[in-house]
Amino acid sequence: MHGQIHQSHLKKYAEKEAYGWTLKLNLSNYKTEKLTEILLNYKIKEGEAVLNGTIDFAETQKANVKEKQEKLKNFFQSRI
Image (cartoon, rainbow, N blue to C red; front, top):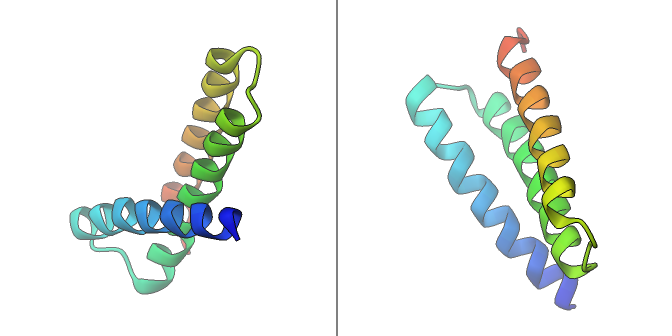
C-alpha cells in the first residue's frame, strides 16, 4: 500500500514535468505519455536510492542523472 501511494505521488510529479515540456514543445499526447514514463522511471530510481539508504548517494544520483539525460536526449531526437 505504502509503495502504491509513493508511486502515485511520483507519477503526479512526472506528469506535471511532462506537461511543462508539452506546453513548451507542443508534444503530441503519445509523446507526452512516453515522456511521462521516462520521467517516472527516474523519479522511482531516485526514491529507491533514498529508501534503500544507498551508501554513496551522490554517485548513484550522478549516474541516474547521466542515464536520464541520455534517455531524454534520445527521446527528443526520435521521430515518434
